[in-house]
Length: 130
Image (cartoon, rainbow, N blue to C red; front, side):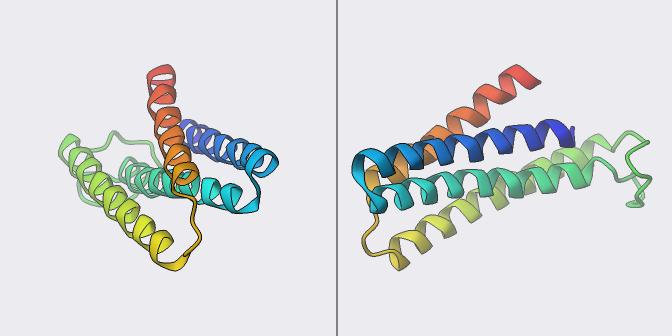
């Protein structure tokens, strides 16, 4: 599971870099930085979610860690999923606010399009991997 999540996040990073490089070639450094920041918002949210989910799958019902050998409690998995999604959403909002406040020259179109591209990669990869 961790390897699959790592591949999905790695693909999100790769897409972000490719789009940022294309923006650098065609539109300049500001668009490239903005595009990469949009992608970073996407893949950092996915990373936060993956850490929460991957950590919950190696826990027993009593909260102890067995190295991933025992099946996780379904309630604990559902709780971890919910908490992971809330953390992902909160981190996404915080990062967007931080970029928009701290980076005065942000190019919003590359920022948003690359963010959307990372979401598309995430969902398409989930359909293929799982």
